[in-house]
Length: 211
Image (cartoon, rainbow, N blue to C red; front, side):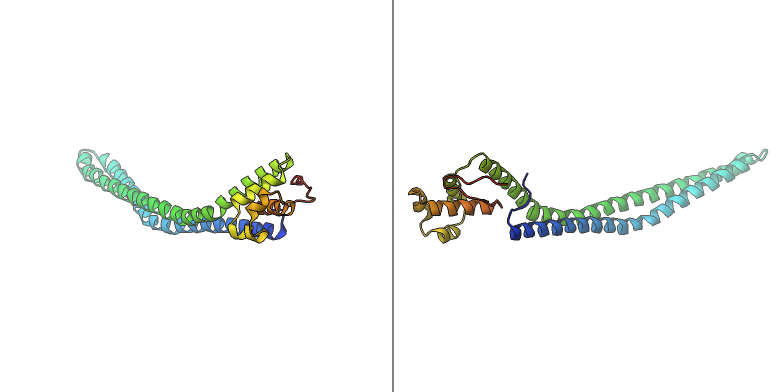
């Protein structure tokens, strides 16, 4: 697999782009975690309600149990405390609900803050990088297998911009048709350069192997 160009300037741009993209992804993840943690702090009130509800229920239940042991009148005295303990259950449920709502909001905001920049980075950076790796790897394999200069020149005529081709020859297609060796070699080099492959020692009929 060929990850980077053979040409220093192009390779330098690729390395810098990779570093910047990975840094942006890391920053986005950190920002998402920070937002999640900040929003999740609002669940503290729900946790306090839940704790208060549990403590209140426990206190009322314990009091009702102790008073229930009083002979003759215990059952009547403990009944209000047992009923009151249900208020603790209500507080506990309210506290848990608040925590769930805040937690869901924290997750949604955290993921949103992290995911949107990461998605943009992947679209702008990763897709072109994957395309380069695929083309460069495939072309290098084809060159090593003996891909000829005229076929590379033909690919250049198909892939490169008209303005770029006219810099090689005002009528590059005609030059290719008549088999102009200089123009064909320049077109082949242009195509290889576009996928980051350098020709160490070009031969007259082939694109030469790439190391």
